[in-house]
Amino acid sequence: MTSIGTGYDLQNSVFSPDGRNFQVEYAVKAVENGGTCIGLKCKDGVVLATEKIITSKLLKPRANRRIATVDRNIGVVSAASMHGDMYMMFTLKVCAGILPDGRHFVSRARDEASSWRSTYKAPIPTKALAGRLASYVQAYTLYSSVRPFGVTAIVAGWDSQAEVGVDGMVGVGPHLGAGGKIGGVETGGPSLYMIEPSGLYWGYYGAATGKGRQTAKAELEKLNLGSGNLTLEEGVKEAARIIYAAHEDSKDKEFELEMSWASSTSGPTRGRHVQVPTELLVEAERLAKKAMEGDDDEEVAGPEEEKMEE
Image 1 (cartoon, helix red, strand yellow):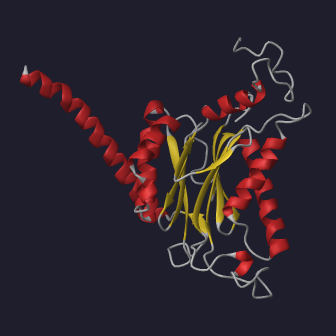
Image 2 (spheres, rainbow, N blue to C red):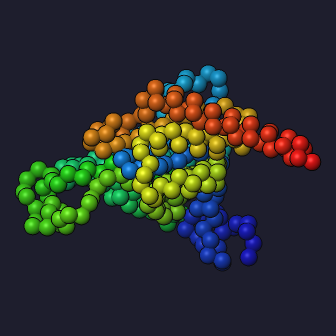
Image 3 (cartoon, rainbow, N blue to C red):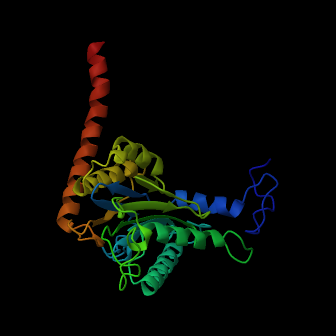
């Protein structure tokens, strides 16, 4: 079968003879051209980081945020192309794709969080928010009157571990615990999900999207995040290093690093999603640049040592 749409990409609701939805594939391609975004799940919180390419010297530093707070404990970050002529592309929550798509996505996420809080009198769990947003994104792949979201989003947050009443306000809940929780089983804590343009979503220890995703994924795998030994502060420094490593393929372009984090209620953010403090961000960038310089020195020393051996 041909890899070209040949008419099957004109409507979102039409499959090609080999079972492909070309408009969703175009959205994925647009996401791949966006800036790199990553998320890390640490033992005491979550970290989000994004690479913002500087397209103009007139842009004000730290003013054009890509990471947005959805609820007090959850955020969204956008790794996006700033070119509107591309077909499609999109925290805590992180997104890679077309910026306006990402902003609409954030707006929808806030509506979902607000609706949950109004109904249940408690913050929305990160998993529930990811599921609702994935369903919303998937609905845009079903009808010919709409197009898929040009967005891949990383949703991260810290869910409360406290035992609360059924509705968070009244009642003591069943004998198993509030909301049917089983006693002695840990609930809440850090959560990290990535939502793709098709509406598919998965839970991750570490996730990456955007142009430098392959390099970022390779570096994330080296951290062995599944062991749960990485602290939140170490995660911030590793995230900065990974963004700088992923940017090496586009080193001719200047970029700005944006980061956010959310910790437990006893941690530095007290359960909230906030921007990483400037002092820690500057320190993380300094260490990242130092690490990149060390890698460059090793590459230069390698050929020289081989010549000396000869």
